[in-house]
Length: 108
Image 1 (cartoon, rainbow, N blue to C red):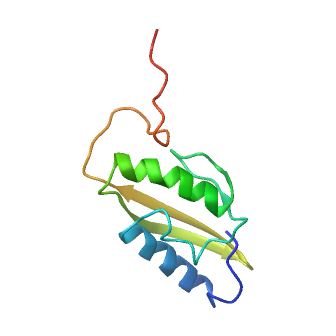
Image 2: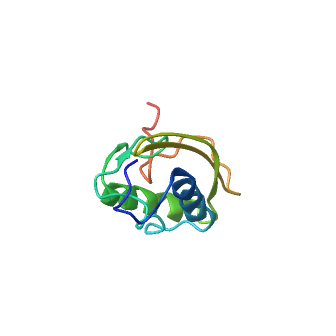
């Protein structure tokens, strides 16, 4: 992910800020961290580019799982690019993949 100008000094700070966002997530928890053109590759949510996409995809997920939190499990960085892997947790259980608030196709 790319980061806004000089708000974060090193990779460790980026990862720490990402983790803080997941402790009490909301659609704008990462606004100071994510650049406008951030590239998002994420399971259960639509992948694409832009902070606005993240906000739009996260809101229905948090509505469905209001107790959702996350934890950084590993990360890697090179220059200004950082790849963060996290694990999400919530008390609700579901048996089908969550597709950002959309219902999965029903079997015929």
